[in-house]
Length: 451
Image 1 (cartoon, helix red, strand yellow):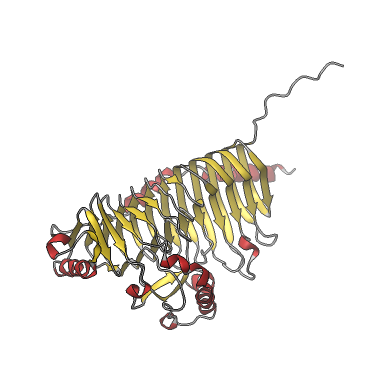
Image 2 (cartoon, rainbow, N blue to C red):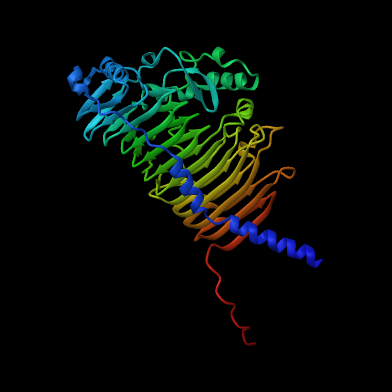
């Protein structure tokens, strides 16, 4: 081999290995850049407005009045004291408001779809459209929070649950409108289309805090961070086991900190998205980026997912110091297909403890084998200090395309103690493995036996 070529290969390998180390300074910079909301001293207790926490009385008008009073005062805190507060319809935020749900308090939403009309601008599985209002909804707001130690109950297990079997017509129409560039104002859904609303959605918002509350029984995705930035989600917990009950979905989101969250979800715990197909690619200037996920307990379908709706691109994601507290199908899951385009790059996953999963680390560019013409770029993905007690199917899976290979993957200090299939590495290049143990560790070789 030419010595100059060998030198360049060695320098490239060393640089690549260094880049694969967990970038603490970058994480600190992102967190420092996130601004917490600031509120005025004005407070209003909903009991003083006539609210009744008897689980029967409709308090919709009371919450609307509290928001209006805060808007008049240029912001403040709405206090929800102990009790069960039925609300027949959505809560729509205004700027500079902290909705504080105190310990022992529960907001319980109705499950009558008509209560969530008129239609609002929202998104459904990566496509912008008009649909039922999310149960808690903020559009173009700044400095907003949901805090306290109370509970938000979406009543998603009855009427909304029946929508899943009937959503096909609406789902396919939304995707067709996406692919054919139908103007968003003409994408009207709602009644007779059966697309369930999100529990909480922040759209085009900035300086957001969701802290310590418990989220239960969502109709659809639980917390959707859509086209928003400077977001802190910390100390919250879940028990939401209905169809598609993702825990947190950052989409076209920037500067996000997710920490100290206890997940228990019927779907992905964190699913990072960035729009779907044609519409997503048209929004390439607003990828999901600068997302930190740390000190979380995973339980549900998948721990951290990127995709499959990621067509505007996902970059600069940092996952550290997380573990499972129950079943996961997959620990870390990067998924896209040839309909999506876009990219996934600069992903760092460090210090993760998984108990029992089906697949431990899974990267695929061929999700469901669907699509053509828009293969995604996946590159610079780094896994380090990861343990898994048992993967009932596969330890590590990497699936690219012959003509669009997955590039620059590092796996450092990985231990998967038991698995059916150890490693599947297809159409990938520059995969560097250091101290990777799958199955029982090999000991020193034994001596030749005597004849």
